[in-house]
Image (cartoon, rainbow, N blue to C red):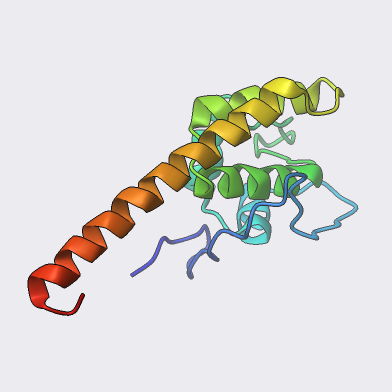
Length: 142
């Protein structure tokens, strides 16, 4: 069984990672954690974790104490999930978001980070291809 989301049901899988991140949720009002979780395809627990990890700013609270997230939080969550799927660590994602939050365009450090991650993925693919070929030879399928 997959991860649960607030209010029951299954969380949607993470979407592909566009560098800008977009989940096409254009709500005019702030939203509570369950609504945000549903919109971004994550669980409420994941949202709280990202807040504690410094990836998602803590939102203002309603008079009754509920978190009240701005609409752009959904796109940020999609970006975070996509970056994780691409193999970036939470610390690396935090660094990218810090640059993004400053209003600066992505700089050489972001490009270098992505290039380094791509090299790691390509190296791992080469290792896995070698392992697959060795296994095929052992089974006589190579």
